[in-house]
Length: 247
Image (cartoon, rainbow, N blue to C red):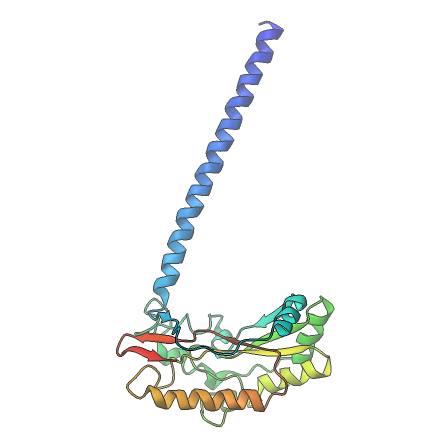
């Protein structure tokens, strides 16, 4: 076999290998797209509750200065846990709720009794805040109440809160105090919708709104200056039973 033919042979092989690589990459990208599409559709079906924006209502927003400060702070911490975490499951979405999350795995009667044994004695808010500062974080957001309705703070308007657990201490307050001590910005997450409250998305929804407003008063008055509030699901909700209700 001539040297010229050898060079030609290897050159052709290189072209074939490149084409195979391109084909494999194309197949992987296409497969990834279809998998992502299925995941998105599954997530959309996860919670049977949709929201529409009422454009007739105008609410005051943050000032440009506040937004700029938040953008400049950049790196922060989001803390997301609760009683169900003690069995290694996801907040709210792991529950099999007949109206909002039929694809969940944990029955409501199991989910809603987790607080009775919830006792996070190793919880150390100062260590959390100091860790955040060490790695360059400037603020945190803590889940005060997620969709399943458990309040990780001392609330006078419900018994389904941290004070009615074996732990019996306000987790949110301890974290807020640690933030003040170490000059770390403090914020909270709050879900306006509630899968535990008996009046939410029912004909008595107005009673739930009163409850919701009372909890917001507690959070805004009992925990000092709030750097950030993260609402998850505001606006017009469409209940399977009622149709449109205002959150």
